[in-house]
Length: 414
Image 1 (cartoon, rainbow, N blue to C red):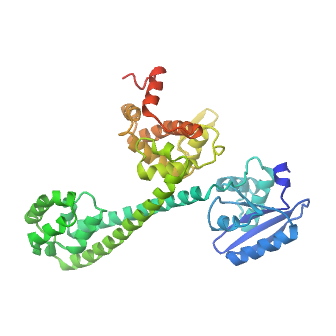
Image 2: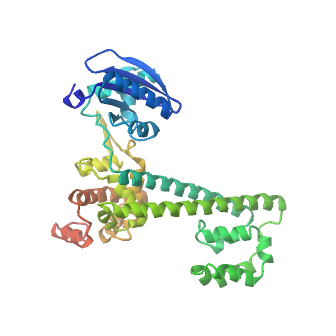
Image 3: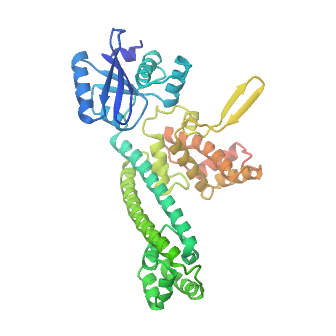
């Protein structure tokens, strides 16, 4: 046992579930192990940990197949507990090596987690809690993204519903997830109701909202006057119009929730020491800059090389060799939300960074599809951002272009 683990008085492997947790416990200077089942509730977890701590009279190391989630959050409350997260794929492969038949049960997984922590301490590192602000920002950006995905699904359903009976609004509005679009449909959910509305009423509706709503009023009124109904069958119109109003109400609520998240994210992001670094990156904006900061975190020892962040984010491909065969494929085991963050940002940087635009066009000229070109760009960006992050230096496009010219980079030789 390494010196890093000798400070603990007990070692626990925990296999989590939604209703109960199986644990395998081994105390210091003993090879005997005992198995227990803990109910998933704050009271049951507290009772089990308090009793174990009173028995061993020292710190406790707990290996679990998670780095976040309810059980991890519950364990982190206790100062005498150190959590050792184990990647699910690592545990699965270790299980396969120990049980080639494929046999699996919860107590065995708890014991396997304990074995991994004790036998491979250089691979299974303790969870290093970041600052409160960093943990909060990380959860906020992930949850905001989930709300955006919910909105996207609702907007797609709304578009499909309108196509069935009332396509006119789709030709009048380009932003189908906006509050303006939803308010318009709630007020006039059918073609017949819209046709009955007076021109002054429609003008007043758009005039009260200002901006582009007023600019496009004449064009929209002309579209209404010249439009024809797709169908007059009430058995189609009534159910779909009710669905449209319901979806609009949900989208408006999601818009409000996303704005609340945006406000909270902005407030925390501005307080972070590295905010200037990620704000300086071209194309990040108020949404992607906090997501990139959360991806890197605060601990400079978390990633020691650019390749580590590239692998973690799933940006570097995997090469497999067997005999004379070689296969290069997409990295499946990675932090998928972080990969999504890098790729979304890289796509935006094409229009905001001179060299990124050139690189993207060269990739496309080689015959690569849009997504493949963006992924290749994200791979390059990761190295640049890693350098900025390690040196605590904001990105400077002029300085980077100068470096490319000094190296006589083929990227600029067009």
